Amino acid sequence: MSNYIDEFQGRFIGIMQWDDCNALLEKLINNPNDWYLYDTLNSVPNETADADLFINKINAIKDTLTSEHQERYCGIVYANDLDNPSFVKIFHPNNLGKSCGSSENPPLPQWLLSKTKPMDVVEEFGTPEAEQGFVSKYLKF
Image (cartoon, rainbow, N blue to C red; front, side, top):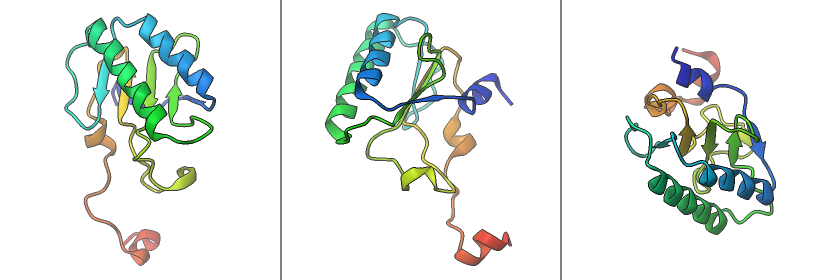
């Protein structure tokens, strides 16, 4: 397995408070170099984003989070390290799947920010092509 996939599946810290989320996003904006910006709705980037594009995209993501996630808490942003992040997962507020992460196929984050060159997580972890029926889901036919 690749280093990127290992990092993607590694330990992340959930950002629950909006102030903590804003502080993390500000850290990213203040350190905009050498980041891969992977929107999982688009193709996997081959190069790091330039600083201006990265800053603009972080600000656009921040606007999306604050306008479309009408909760008192954040809970949809995760970082591998709060002080010195090198991998950040951000879920789109309108694609959160079933509540409490209990889904057998949880949604993928829409935005993956990393210092490591990304691999196609949609291909690796995307939703199954066909829904399983109730019986086959539990009996694994």
